[in-house]
Length: 183
Image (spheres, one colour):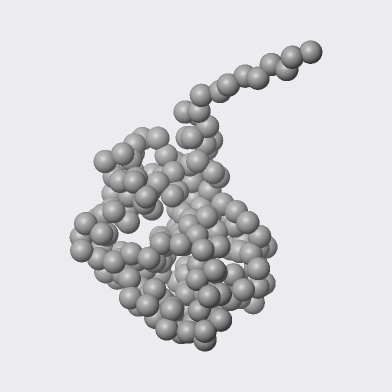
């Protein structure tokens, strides 16, 4: 996680400048509001959240960062020794909890349950920031509808939702190598 606002190119991503500025001052975290950034790969979602994370840490606050898969694994290990509640309580001590890349891989029942537990525990107490290729309204396509509906209801109740658009910034900067098969 080396991306900061110093390396952020405000003009490149499809996140409009006013929300960028408003979110960068971090007041939303003090109000336990959430952030959901959705859109195609390479449009600046994770970079922007990483920059926020660095600002949060610089402001003396704590952050917990996961992908949905790593969070599910953490909760799975806690289930083995019956410490799920303790693990969730420890994670939600952070002022900002990030779950990155929701929807890249199919979500299991365990992932959906873990995500719901996190959203419910943080609801109106801590800020969550999520990145996803799917808008949260579509989470019922990757997890059971009941869990998705309950999690999204809490997640979006006090949330800033940003939808990115466009083509991948990574691909636009890629150096292409052509391989010509030998015949």
